[in-house]
Length: 192
Figure 1: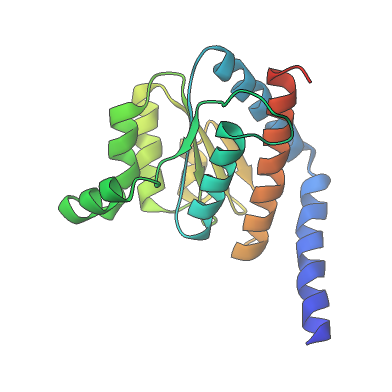
Figure 2 (figure 1 turned 30 degrees about the vertical axis):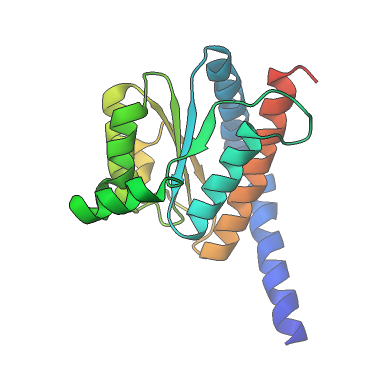
């Protein structure tokens, strides 16, 4: 078992090393930081969505913005779309689970808001439909996926596609880059 543990850690480090050395991906993260800071300064909102572990990561990242990351500061307008369980279960029951995010984006999303969708495969139907609705409303989309981006690739204005097909390793890298984005947005927005 000791070797299995080391192999898993090594696999995680390998993916993160690939991210570290991917100048394209680093540039996209830099562009996303600038985008989010600019949109917050315009009074726009940041929304997150995902399924399963990616929903937990979406909620985690939304909380870093709306709560705090490193510094005590005002809350930023950010939320995870799945946190209203009454809404989620009603829409899933009355319409379809595939529509849980798109209906909410249609209802609350405004032009120039930002929608971040976390999907390791890039093929989650409910996130794809949310991105389609976001496009119709002039909302900027950021896809966080695994290698290649899946179907979200063509619907993402910005794509963070982690160079892996292994779900846990992709999610670990999503959180690494998500935390970097939170830290840099917070520092730039509040000039600290």
